Image (tube, rainbow, N blue to C red; front, top):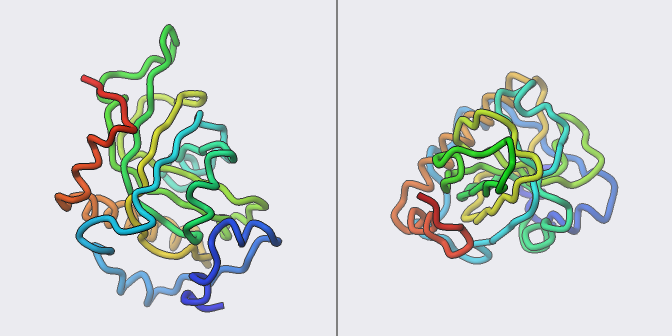
Length: 202
Protein backbone atom coordinates (compact mmCIF):
# COMPACT_ATOMS: atom_id res chain seq x y z
CA UNK A 1 0.00 0.00 0.00
CA UNK A 2 1.35 3.42 -0.90
CA UNK A 3 1.05 6.58 1.19
CA UNK A 4 -1.32 8.03 -1.42
CA UNK A 5 -3.64 5.03 -1.13
CA UNK A 6 -4.07 5.58 2.62
CA UNK A 7 -5.80 8.89 1.84
CA UNK A 8 -8.79 7.29 0.11
CA UNK A 9 -10.78 6.26 3.20
CA UNK A 10 -11.89 8.17 6.25
CA UNK A 11 -10.75 6.84 9.61
CA UNK A 12 -14.32 5.71 10.35
CA UNK A 13 -14.39 3.66 7.16
CA UNK A 14 -11.18 1.87 8.09
CA UNK A 15 -12.70 1.04 11.48
CA UNK A 16 -15.39 -1.11 9.86
CA UNK A 17 -12.73 -3.65 8.84
CA UNK A 18 -9.80 -5.40 10.47
CA UNK A 19 -6.76 -3.29 11.23
CA UNK A 20 -5.72 -1.84 7.84
CA UNK A 21 -2.15 -2.13 6.56
CA UNK A 22 -0.01 0.99 6.66
CA UNK A 23 2.98 1.96 4.52
CA UNK A 24 6.36 1.70 6.23
CA UNK A 25 8.18 4.95 6.88
CA UNK A 26 11.46 5.06 5.01
CA UNK A 27 14.56 7.04 5.84
CA UNK A 28 14.08 9.05 2.66
CA UNK A 29 10.58 10.10 3.77
CA UNK A 30 11.88 11.32 7.14
CA UNK A 31 14.77 13.18 5.53
CA UNK A 32 12.49 15.03 3.13
CA UNK A 33 9.77 16.07 5.55
CA UNK A 34 8.85 19.78 5.41
CA UNK A 35 9.02 21.92 8.55
CA UNK A 36 5.59 23.45 7.93
CA UNK A 37 2.53 21.98 6.20
CA UNK A 38 -0.94 23.00 5.09
CA UNK A 39 -2.50 26.31 4.10
CA UNK A 40 -1.95 29.61 5.90
CA UNK A 41 -5.37 29.33 7.51
CA UNK A 42 -7.53 26.34 8.44
CA UNK A 43 -9.66 24.96 5.61
CA UNK A 44 -12.56 22.49 5.73
CA UNK A 45 -13.06 20.13 7.44
CA UNK A 46 -11.12 22.15 10.02
CA UNK A 47 -11.58 23.37 12.68
CA UNK A 48 -12.90 20.20 14.32
CA UNK A 49 -13.88 20.49 18.00
CA UNK A 50 -13.53 17.43 20.25
CA UNK A 51 -14.08 16.95 23.97
CA UNK A 52 -14.37 14.24 26.57
CA UNK A 53 -12.97 12.83 29.79
CA UNK A 54 -9.37 11.63 29.45
CA UNK A 55 -9.21 7.82 29.38
CA UNK A 56 -6.42 5.47 30.39
CA UNK A 57 -4.62 4.21 27.31
CA UNK A 58 -1.78 1.78 26.78
CA UNK A 59 0.68 3.78 28.88
CA UNK A 60 3.47 3.44 26.35
CA UNK A 61 3.64 7.01 25.00
CA UNK A 62 5.57 8.35 27.95
CA UNK A 63 7.39 5.15 28.90
CA UNK A 64 8.41 3.90 25.45
CA UNK A 65 8.45 7.01 23.30
CA UNK A 66 9.07 9.99 25.57
CA UNK A 67 5.76 11.44 24.39
CA UNK A 68 2.96 11.02 26.97
CA UNK A 69 -0.49 11.01 25.40
CA UNK A 70 -4.08 11.40 26.53
CA UNK A 71 -6.85 9.29 25.02
CA UNK A 72 -10.30 10.66 24.29
CA UNK A 73 -13.33 8.37 24.78
CA UNK A 74 -14.64 6.43 21.78
CA UNK A 75 -17.87 8.42 21.63
CA UNK A 76 -15.96 11.64 20.96
CA UNK A 77 -14.18 10.27 17.86
CA UNK A 78 -16.87 10.26 15.13
CA UNK A 79 -16.79 14.06 14.84
CA UNK A 80 -13.29 13.64 13.42
CA UNK A 81 -13.07 10.06 12.17
CA UNK A 82 -16.05 10.50 9.86
CA UNK A 83 -14.50 13.43 7.98
CA UNK A 84 -10.75 12.73 8.06
CA UNK A 85 -8.38 9.85 7.35
CA UNK A 86 -6.04 8.27 9.85
CA UNK A 87 -2.85 10.18 10.46
CA UNK A 88 -1.22 12.89 12.53
CA UNK A 89 -2.87 16.25 13.19
CA UNK A 90 -2.18 19.50 15.04
CA UNK A 91 -4.23 22.01 16.99
CA UNK A 92 -4.82 23.32 20.49
CA UNK A 93 -5.99 21.57 23.66
CA UNK A 94 -7.06 22.47 27.16
CA UNK A 95 -7.31 20.20 30.20
CA UNK A 96 -9.93 21.50 32.62
CA UNK A 97 -9.40 21.31 36.38
CA UNK A 98 -11.72 19.27 38.58
CA UNK A 99 -12.97 21.17 41.60
CA UNK A 100 -11.95 19.75 44.99
CA UNK A 101 -9.68 17.21 43.31
CA UNK A 102 -6.37 16.35 44.98
CA UNK A 103 -4.79 16.20 41.51
CA UNK A 104 -5.44 19.91 41.00
CA UNK A 105 -3.91 21.47 37.92
CA UNK A 106 -1.79 24.59 38.15
CA UNK A 107 -2.94 27.75 36.42
CA UNK A 108 -0.50 27.18 33.57
CA UNK A 109 -1.47 23.53 33.20
CA UNK A 110 -5.11 24.49 32.62
CA UNK A 111 -4.23 27.01 29.91
CA UNK A 112 -4.67 26.33 26.19
CA UNK A 113 -1.58 24.61 24.76
CA UNK A 114 -0.44 23.34 21.34
CA UNK A 115 -1.10 19.68 20.73
CA UNK A 116 -0.24 16.98 18.21
CA UNK A 117 -2.66 14.10 17.73
CA UNK A 118 -2.52 10.61 16.26
CA UNK A 119 -5.80 9.27 14.93
CA UNK A 120 -5.48 5.67 13.89
CA UNK A 121 -4.39 2.14 14.67
CA UNK A 122 -0.76 2.66 15.71
CA UNK A 123 0.48 -0.04 13.33
CA UNK A 124 3.90 -0.28 15.02
CA UNK A 125 2.07 -1.56 18.13
CA UNK A 126 -0.63 -3.40 16.15
CA UNK A 127 -3.64 -1.87 17.90
CA UNK A 128 -6.95 -3.65 17.43
CA UNK A 129 -9.13 -0.53 17.58
CA UNK A 130 -9.12 3.03 16.30
CA UNK A 131 -7.88 5.54 18.89
CA UNK A 132 -7.24 9.25 19.21
CA UNK A 133 -4.08 9.92 21.22
CA UNK A 134 -3.24 13.53 22.02
CA UNK A 135 0.13 14.85 23.16
CA UNK A 136 -0.28 18.26 24.78
CA UNK A 137 2.96 20.17 24.42
CA UNK A 138 3.33 21.21 28.03
CA UNK A 139 5.26 19.47 30.87
CA UNK A 140 2.41 18.42 33.16
CA UNK A 141 3.56 17.35 36.62
CA UNK A 142 1.11 14.44 36.93
CA UNK A 143 -1.48 12.53 34.95
CA UNK A 144 -4.94 13.98 34.40
CA UNK A 145 -7.10 10.90 33.88
CA UNK A 146 -10.77 11.74 34.30
CA UNK A 147 -10.27 15.43 33.60
CA UNK A 148 -12.21 16.91 30.71
CA UNK A 149 -10.09 17.73 27.69
CA UNK A 150 -11.21 20.11 24.98
CA UNK A 151 -9.49 20.09 21.62
CA UNK A 152 -9.66 22.09 18.41
CA UNK A 153 -8.04 20.17 15.54
CA UNK A 154 -6.77 22.61 12.91
CA UNK A 155 -4.70 20.73 10.36
CA UNK A 156 -3.15 17.56 9.01
CA UNK A 157 0.54 16.69 9.14
CA UNK A 158 0.98 13.25 7.58
CA UNK A 159 -0.58 9.80 7.06
CA UNK A 160 -0.33 6.98 9.56
CA UNK A 161 2.81 4.90 9.01
CA UNK A 162 4.42 1.72 10.25
CA UNK A 163 8.05 1.58 11.36
CA UNK A 164 10.97 -0.82 11.23
CA UNK A 165 12.24 0.36 14.63
CA UNK A 166 11.16 2.30 17.70
CA UNK A 167 13.96 4.78 17.02
CA UNK A 168 12.49 5.61 13.59
CA UNK A 169 9.07 6.13 15.16
CA UNK A 170 10.51 8.45 17.81
CA UNK A 171 12.30 10.45 15.12
CA UNK A 172 9.03 11.03 13.28
CA UNK A 173 7.21 11.92 16.51
CA UNK A 174 9.80 14.58 17.31
CA UNK A 175 9.43 15.96 13.79
CA UNK A 176 5.64 15.95 14.19
CA UNK A 177 5.95 18.10 17.32
CA UNK A 178 8.21 20.58 15.59
CA UNK A 179 6.00 20.78 12.51
CA UNK A 180 2.90 21.28 14.67
CA UNK A 181 4.49 24.21 16.52
CA UNK A 182 5.59 25.80 13.24
CA UNK A 183 2.12 25.43 11.74
CA UNK A 184 0.35 26.80 14.79
CA UNK A 185 2.61 29.86 14.94
CA UNK A 186 0.81 31.30 11.89
CA UNK A 187 -1.57 34.17 12.82
CA UNK A 188 -4.73 32.53 11.44
CA UNK A 189 -4.08 29.51 13.67
CA UNK A 190 -3.04 31.45 16.78
CA UNK A 191 -6.48 33.01 17.05
CA UNK A 192 -7.91 29.57 17.88
CA UNK A 193 -6.25 29.76 21.30
CA UNK A 194 -9.27 31.94 22.14
CA UNK A 195 -11.86 29.63 20.57
CA UNK A 196 -15.20 29.67 22.47
CA UNK A 197 -14.77 25.93 23.11
CA UNK A 198 -12.05 26.71 25.63
CA UNK A 199 -12.81 28.02 29.09
CA UNK A 200 -11.22 31.33 30.00
CA UNK A 201 -8.46 30.80 32.53
CA UNK A 202 -6.13 33.20 34.24
